Amino acid sequence: MILDYKDYDKIVSHRKKSDRFSVIIAVVLGIVVIIGLLYAISWKNNYRLQNLLSTLKCEEARQYVDSHYYFFHRSNAHEANALLELVEKKFEPAEYYFSNNEPGRFPDYWNKYVDLFIKNGDYRYGMLYLTYLKKKFTYNDIEGYHCIVSTILNNFASANNCLENARNISSLKKYAEILSAVEQKKRFNWIVDRHDNPLVYKKTGSPDYFYSNEDIAWLKPDMLALEEKDYYNTLKLTLDAKLQKYAYDALGNYHGTLLLMKKDGQLLAAVSKIDDKGEPLFIRLLKPGSIVKIVTSSAAMRNNIDLSKIFPLECKGFIVPYEKKIFYDWLAHEKVESIVEALASSCNVSFGIIGNYVKEKKLMEELDHFGINKTITMEGMKFPAGKVLPNPSDPIYEYSLAIGDNYIQITPVLALLWVSAIINDGIAMIPFFLKSAQSIADVSYKAKKGEILSKFTNKDYLEPIYQGMIDAVEKDFGTGKRAKLEQYRIALKTGTAGEKDPAYDAIIIGYAPAEKPQIVFVMFALSAGKASLEGTRIIKEFLASALPYYESSN
Image (cartoon, rainbow, N blue to C red; front, side, top):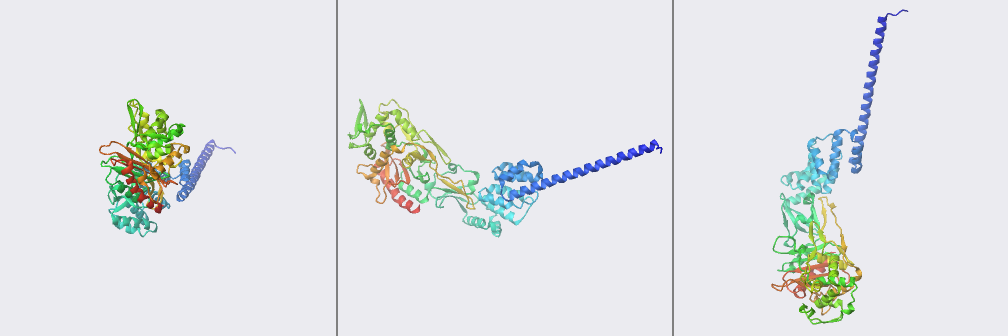
């Protein structure tokens, strides 16, 4: 058979068209299959992500989003990312997304995250997420949660109506009742003591705060190193309102400070009585007087001073270490048998001689061991612990250092650390007074425990200090004998500093009970006179009320 070449061209052309059509069909089918696979993968990934989010497995969800980012519906990935940013406390990135996008499908797990934010006290995070959801969804539960969070954030203007509606939602009933009570009282107890008694409160609809009693008026919010959310939650302090009042009342009309602290560093009372509105008196530099003798005692022990070469000694009320240079005592103590008696009777002559044996360099080293050159951080406050003024070519400089006269300044907080070290085998605990913060759901965050600052001295060096502070109260020659209580044994060291005109400052540090110390105390009463007289009266009045109460409430 002979084919016409024209027929051949037609056949070839037909086959080419058929082949092209087959290729197109194959390509289209391939694309459909790929799209289907991608959709299936995307659906699977989205399902997995929603499952992780609904079970609050946020870390796994974050890893899953990061590793499969290009296999999600883009809006779902962005929304999940923003929500996880909130969980990770990254507010700004989440805010950017939520402000510039609309919700996709309704997230079944939304209330779990809002509940999480409320329990953790992160109300602003909850508000951001709820505001985002309200762009598209208007369910009653979302409105109820929005009402609760908005009211907590101090928007009480429309609280009555929406709180009534929120009561009908079982998961919100408790919150609605709490906020309704706050709205009725027109006040919110912001800062409370260890027994939940109000110390500082806010009025609804106002950012201002007010003190329940003047004994806490030294406390400013920035002293607590607060986060933004802390302003809307309850802050629980270690302080005790009753002990605060006992301390404040005991100081009477004197300017001064009185501190009471547990063995682990929890401040039970912190009073600062001063006319000016500056920083609390307990973080200001003051002259310590004879309480420095406990540091000198430790220096003598650390440097193996042969005390048998010093004691017993005869104290005539002064010595003349150098020609025409007299070193005075506040009393002629007559015979002083030991360093224990010297500490209890606060004999300047004895400690001046000990200082001369230890020498200036070693005294300075011991003061450094006892933290005088440290910077103390206590909550949001940061301050120098103390300072030593340089030697002004005074021939009896080391005598003066040894008794805390003229050249030494410390904060009352450092004095508290000294006593803390005495009852903790030489280890000083950092004082703190913020115990925890609590959300409206009664969930605590920011819970704190005692922390060690440093080791000031060795346990082996403390025995004469223990006994000397006990004898200061229990022996007739003790400078603290007027502070003796019938029911409790206490131990203390007195100090008198400053100028005679108008009157000396009375300083007392100590611990109780003497046999098994649990608490330490420090008092600086400015211009109150000698510590052995007015100082002991003040501390006795305080402890006579404080110790029975503390024993019954702990």
